Image 1 (tube, rainbow, N blue to C red):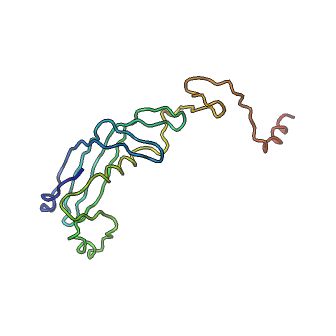
Image 2 (cartoon, one colour):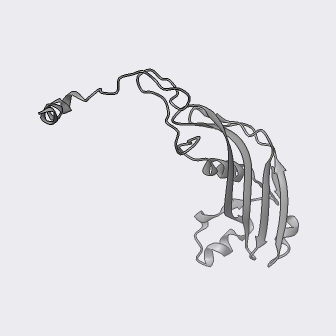
Length: 173
C-alpha cells in the first residue's frame, strides 16, 4: 500500500486525514500463521511540520489466534496506535543541522511512501506474545493431553520431584 504525499509536502503546517481499508496477506510469527480475514481499518493523520511528515494512525483488525494453554483457536480483535516520522532525502541535511537524530525517522526518496512495513509492525505489536483464550483457561493435562476446559482427566496428580522426596517424608511424620 502506497500513499502519495506530493500535496502534503507542499502544505507545511497542515494535517491531512485518511480513512482506508487494506487486505493484508497472512503473516508468520515464529511458527504460527496469522490470517486476517477482513480488511484492516486504518485511520491516518499526516501532519507536515516543515521538514518532517508525522504519521499518526490507528489500525484495527480481526483474526484468530491459538491459545497458548489449550491450543484452541479463538477470535481476537487487535487495536493499535502508531506514530512514525518521515523525512524526504532532500531535507535530511537540514534536519541533521538542526540537531535531530536522523536515525529516529524513515527516509523516503519519491513522493510515494510505502505503508506495508508500518502496517505489518502494527499488527505484530498489536497481537499478544502469549495469547490466552480466557483468564480462567485451564490448558492441557501435562500427562494425558486432554483439554481441561472441556473434560476432567483421571491422571494422578501426586507426582513429586525426586529431589523433594525428603521433604515429603518430613511432612508425613
